[in-house]
Length: 111
Image: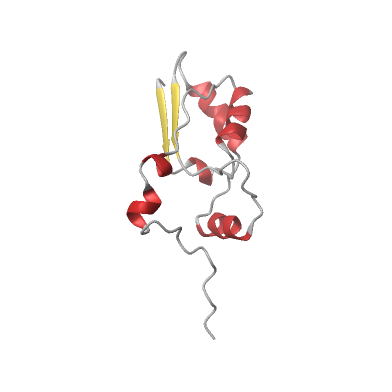
């Protein structure tokens, strides 16, 4: 394969290391893996309540920064070529949430 696209799918992988390993095996020399997905911002606590709510609600198995992903990818001869934060670049919060972060608090249980 010359190109592997993963759009909003990698985060659901049960084993990101094995996923990258298999993609590396399937790629032709000079092939590309393009991942468009959610990643942690450096310094964000994976175990923070809002992150865990996000993870559970989106069935997100992979909570990595792009830096930690690059380290894992490097073990399989894959290299991070470009790292773009599309959320900031396209002002997702400003345009879709009136410049406020979406409310990530758990909903109240019905009695």
